[in-house]
Image (cartoon, rainbow, N blue to C red; front, side):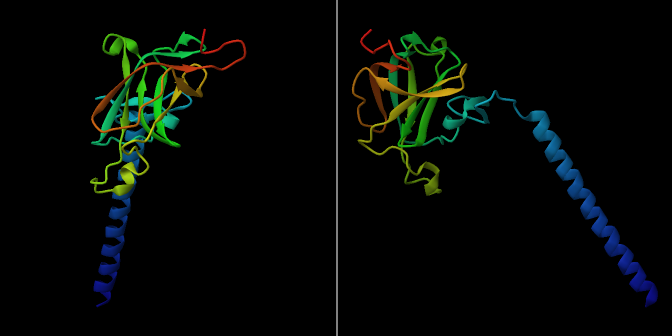
Length: 191
């Protein structure tokens, strides 16, 4: 019996050590794969697997919480400016319902239809298995607000439209003239 107890203790210890080795190996693989395959983003940006793109991209932090919804509308703008100057191709426009980001687009007009870009604006999806997934997103008639992220300054600006923004409706396209930001004295929207 003594021999069996020693043997059983030794077996238990070896099994335990093998389990620990596997855990350490898995942690090591997880750590190094996250280091090797992660994307370094500039300050103010977060890495996302997908946001209106087939590839992984860096997205402004305040715009990185957007989830895809099957309910969407698209707001098009002919121009987006800060103090009258068009924003850069690495700047972003985000749509909000209150303080919840419900859509965003990098404003690279070379990639948009005839230089006119859209901002996809996601709606609340009561049919999604996880009701929190799109909680606070747009419902019919809600009016989104827009923000511009200036990448070079790592700054968010509230944007004003040249026209009244229409209320959100699913599967709808809303054309508009422009989004503008005025940041300092001596410049007005009328210029």
